[in-house]
Length: 463
Ligand code: SF4
Image (cartoon, rainbow, N blue to C red; front, side, top):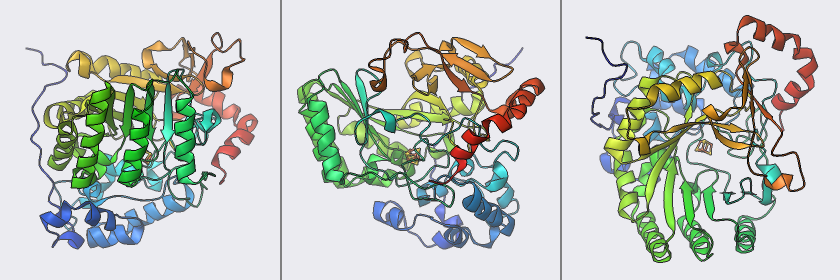
């Protein structure tokens, strides 16, 4: 008998024992479950990481991390204990092989990137750029991206409780790093939110608002509640999605009594008005789904919101196999009642080549995962094409696999193309990582390096 490519097995969730880390050996369950304790004990630098993990983590790893932070990192370090505890979940730092397992860990690979992870040949694609999706260009008012005709993205704040190495919004989100300065909002936070609400009141064509950042878990609850409540007062808004990776990274936040009670009030108001509120989270690896994460997701559903959905990112060394993706989708769906929804190709930001997959790899992964999950929970692989928007990976109109250039078209005008007659007939390009191309394609790109040098310099320069 020939076996199936993937065999489903139900996962049993277990919270990894945080007491295996020397600095947390005396931390109680009550402390661990406190959002305040988690926020106060986030790991923000090399010294704190070393203090938490102790001498079991090699000096070489720390030097590798230090070099990355000085020369490559586009995001500063911020890892809540909850997330750190899901790395190498079954090994204590003083056990043999810990550093090697830490290097190989999927969550470590995107939350605590080190210099040796990155491509030495092409750390960045020549066409990589800050704000690679041109969101700021499409701001209707500061922080409100109006890209699609019927929906908007509201970036309500530029911070998160955790910083991911591959963050698409590295231009705006988080603290500056030695190589990347951050764009700063000009308006005061309350004025920015007011301007967004005013714009939406005057925009009857918009029915769907993604409330994001950053991560909405960092907005003080009363301010988030007031903002969402104002959205609910606008008659044409029918869908509201709250974007928060913290549902996984800091589930303690969403389990706090005041937050649950507040979301319950919003869910009741939404229900009265026939509006759907959903939480969209960002989980990339099955090991991130712990009992606390499942409890937080259930608590959100219990408030009466419509759904909790996952938008992950396809990352090499993290989740780039069908098995890893299916394990993740099943644990989300079966154990946490989180709906698998999208997996994005990692966007073309500086320093991301070692994480990025080619379009062909994403198409193959889509093919490989079909048929195992229920259709409604089978995530779509998505390429977010600059100036186009989200496209399913099979929607490509032309694909030069030797040069790694895919061409895409679209069926709507973004807010910056109101007068552009050719917007719907033009093709827009997206680029595969060069190191994955055949030799002839790699040579083509190398020969053009000099020609592309100004663009490459522009994207790697600070500020
Ligand atoms: S949580 Fe989202 S916005 Fe925040 S750093 Fe991660 S990817 Fe970026």
